[in-house]
Amino acid sequence: MINGQRVHVSEQVSYATNYRSVLATQSGNNPHIHPSEPNYLWAEAGTNFGVLNDNDPFATNGPTNQNATQHLTALLTAGGHTSKSYQGDTDLLKDASGKLTNVVRPKSDWTVPLKSISGVFSSGVNDFNGPTQYNYAAKHNPMVFFTNTNGGNDTTSANPLALNYAPPSSCGSTNQKAMVSPATIRTTSRTPSWRLSSRRARTKT
Image (tube, rainbow, N blue to C red; front, side, top):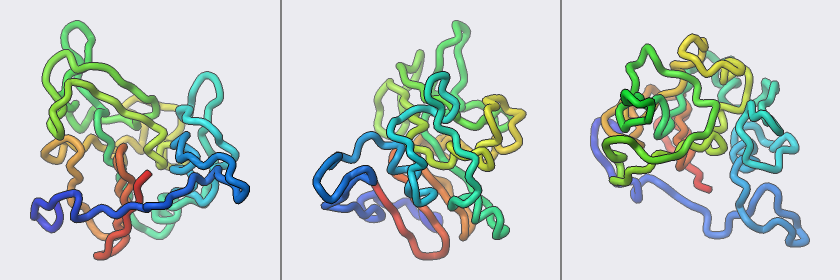
């Protein structure tokens, strides 16, 4: 939704026809855009901090959380602006047997999505395109890799930064971005997008 009007994503998204991975070299090594995480870190902070994988920020083996303060969302906060990251397939309610459904938890139970998850809904489908699969990948959520924007290794609703992350379905339908005020950064698990003014700049990997 843009200014209260439904628009087609194809009308709002641009893409690079000759995109190169941040790990690529002039000699032609590492030409592919995978792994994703180094590219997303670079988009947020201008460097990949030596990360060469898709690990979660607080993974048991090879955690990739960063304590850096010079990155986009931190600079927005320092400038007095708000930020929010919209991530599909996060904060889902469990059924009586402990399996995830397609229903989003109440806002008071939202968390910082520090861990990647994937599987099949016990009931319901993804409202955006109809599959029964859920799939949240932290590697596509650059804000979640920085201590000052993820609140530390706390996956509970007590994390003081939990409300800086929201499931898009809380805005009407899964993966549909809510309208937010200017100077607000918004990212989704599929396509990171930044809105810093009335103009839009979008990237896709």
